[in-house]
Length: 277
Image (cartoon, rainbow, N blue to C red):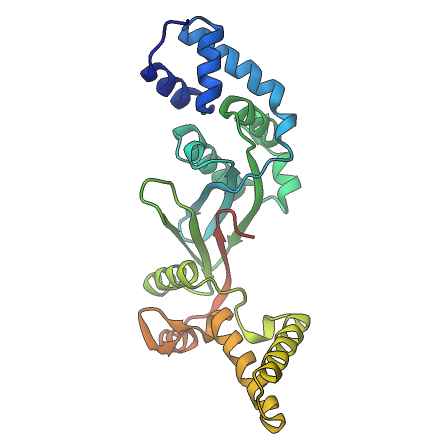
């Protein structure tokens, strides 16, 4: 039997990001030689990168960067487990990618993959992270705003993990407190649109159909159904349109009221929650 202790397995997991059983097998195969086990896991990781394509990267981190509150970037980097998500290497990867987006302003994820990061294409950096950490690592989405006043808010739903929810908001003019309040509102209340005018027509029609069918199944009077549908669609706007949401700090005010009182206009916003499209 190879000569190693539970502490060696733990240390190997922390260094490589590999699973517990993989670490035990590596130590068994190398007779407890720690450095040889690290090498073995790195080689195995490189061979297994292609096999991870079908696996689910539903954990990860939301990272962001802001320069002089005039431009900001925001990215979700995904992995398979929260164990890898909280490692220093993974967190550093998220920060580097966010800064690269801010600097180069790629138009989409494909363009981002072809940018250079530390002398290599981002895709190659991710492939090497796959091999090193033993998990599927990917970037699904990012946002980048330039101009006006930009504010970033990152939230840790679990204090033991890195930020898993975040919001990036762009105002037409500077107002630090309102920008901060809005970023926190967006992170907490998850609006999908800025105003009801931004909601696609097919989404509204779907809400109307659901509201009508629900009202009929509830046995509501035919004469009342149109009003019920109107009310339920209105509730949808209040839930998912930022301007119509109640402000979390004072639910007697809507976000539109808050903006009007401060003479501020929202130009754009983005909200990401790790693993949630």
